[in-house]
Image 1 (spheres, rainbow, N blue to C red):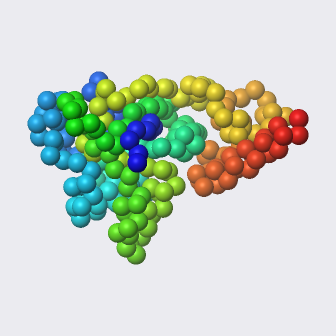
Image 2: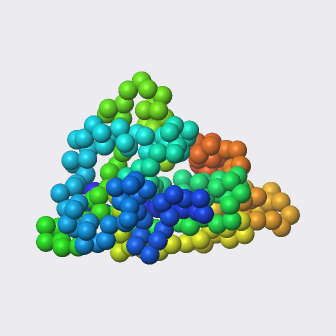
Image 3: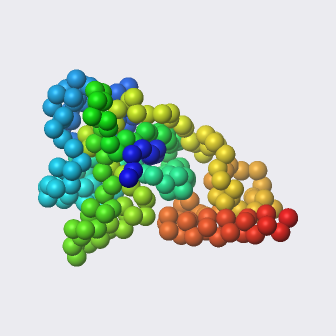
Length: 235
């Protein structure tokens, strides 16, 4: 049974759910202004992942939220906040935003996820849902349903309802065209001899951050990882 994990949230200057002094607050009017910790404990104590999973309206909202970034009702406010369990996806997405969207920085927040809390816990409880098994179970033939299912699986998406509390944010790291906040796995880069003349890290990636989908980038990362493994074995 899952109890804890670390998820990743990416934000930039265009994000409608940015990092603030209170953490992250969903863009839906229900959470404007952002509920204080005391308000959350009072007004949302009865909410939990199970009751949201059982709600048809909540499930429809999850599909709408996930598919909104890909051209389906993209202006709609949402009570959900997106994160990912996949470091590879987060690296790909940070590179894509910097290379393709002409932005100057991307923040990567590492967030402690608690699937369950002890009965004695008295602090504010975040509400998390793994959307893929939920929307896969109720998937219809509608295009946005299938798009949401595919994206949730590919990106290893995990959703928070309403708020991500500051207490659960472990750290936030900044990415830029010239800088990564930590050394990326070797399988992210082409062989050294194929690096271009001195340029930024984006130019050395094994995939094209401007045009490759995550599926394409992941195949290239896996192929590079296999090559590195064979090289180490033969040393």
